[in-house]
Length: 341
Image 1: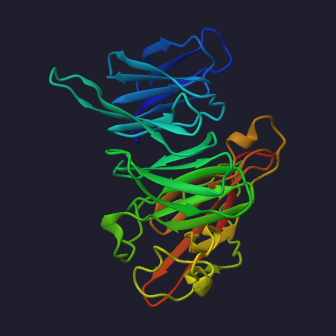
Image 2 (image 1 turned 120 degrees about the vertical axis):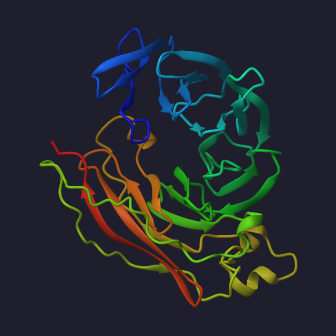
Image 3 (image 1 turned 45 degrees about the vertical axis):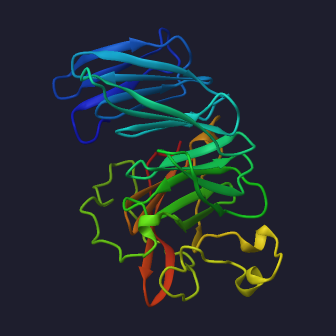
């Protein structure tokens, strides 16, 4: 759905001809549609753009209430997970070579049409990409590879590497990445069933500020008949050690060992300052590995993780940041969003 408007983007994945249609739910009529030759893995709709992802291509369009106009078609590495992020001015997805990120900057041209302003390729990883996300200002792209040990941050404007974060030492499948609304933190989920939270090493966030008041958007919508109301389910609290302002940004898991001369990278790398376990759901349906463990932010203090498969549910986590106390991350509730068979 396009924000909170009445415009819906509808995609038929397995019926020929495969197409995406813009539908006005208030008027109950189709606005326009386009046909795609390849199987559709994912589609993203924003106010001005549509991105359709197939297994080896990305189709980019601009749209209005009357028509859809193609911008370009871009080849990618094999992309069965539909890895792509689309914002108001930036689109990022796997480039043709594994481990590289294709960055497209979008905007208004001299002719007044929305189109591609610039394109760059970022060599981010040696292994194929597994997850991408953009910060809210779309100035930073975060990425993880299929190896899953490191998350790297690059500038979308000049492709410079801004830093890297270590999720862990052993390889893992990263499910999802999401930056907080303020752009100060990054949430990461993986098949270790752990939610990690890092600080993003951006120049304008070197001084950590107190979280803003809770957003009016809440997860307290009335549950349907097939849902279970949000249940309180406290989980063990994960906390980072008390530190002075700014050191959360570069928190060293191994303490003084990281300061030893010639210490290996596994000791000097930046780790998450808080983490907690989550329920990934049961693998009862084909392809659930591509969609479970999806993470998102309601506000700078609330994180939601969606599970998949049988008995699918969402879990809500609360992040507390205080200048005088350790940061804490704990589960505060959960709810089913699908009726078990």
